[in-house]
Image (cartoon, rainbow, N blue to C red; front, side, top):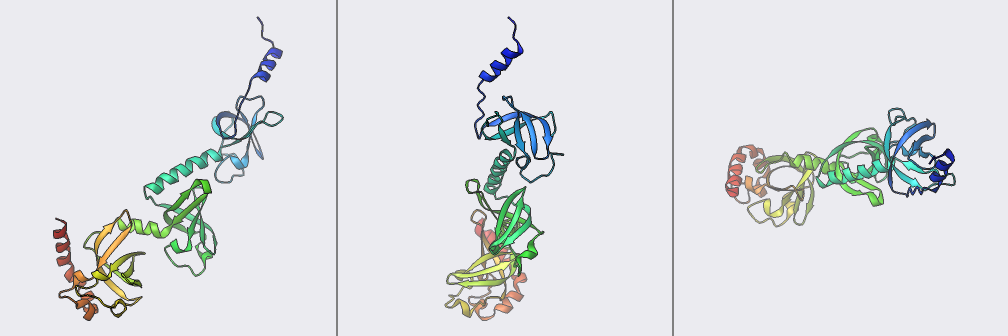
Length: 292
């Protein structure tokens, strides 16, 4: 039995090519045009890949991105039209892979370097491997009088929110600095910082771009009745790291461990801080004994 060209055409027409939107298909690039690429995916007609769907980052040419005669994976983004042509995307597949990668990095509390590409009153936008991310002003890690000054700079950031469903990627330079610093801190370490704020339960001390809590019970061996009478916002201070909680990103500080007698920090804080390095060996030994 012979199988003519006409028979072949009829068989091809009868074949049901079901390229559903969202499905992944393999196809071979046939040719390029300024607005996209023609791809053979085995359908009645060649499929089309718009140039805007060729990569996560916008491109103006297929040079170095796709090669003719090479097979790639694509996602179907439009059903067959009247001519049987399917619309394809590589960008959507890459975005899905990138979201998964970023979610994994966020779970591992990883940090990464990004470039600031723009700004608004709430913070700055950043380029995250071709994806747009956002860093709130409060998470920049440093103060900018004009956020426009940050454009073009590179930031080391951690992850605040990775939400592909809402297309929301929120980053934090402050969190990254804290995470990196946490890995270098040790119990018994002396830090030099500044009192950033006073709360009923204690003071937050900023040092090396991060902050730790000096609880009111850790200020002195004597009872502290009025925190503002002992510490002032902006005051230079030395304290000892007495607890670290990497999971909750918490740093606990103490000045009472530097006291030679109860209440010394209340009466002679400057003298205690001036002699802090000399007193540190005794503090470290005490902390190590408490861990044993």
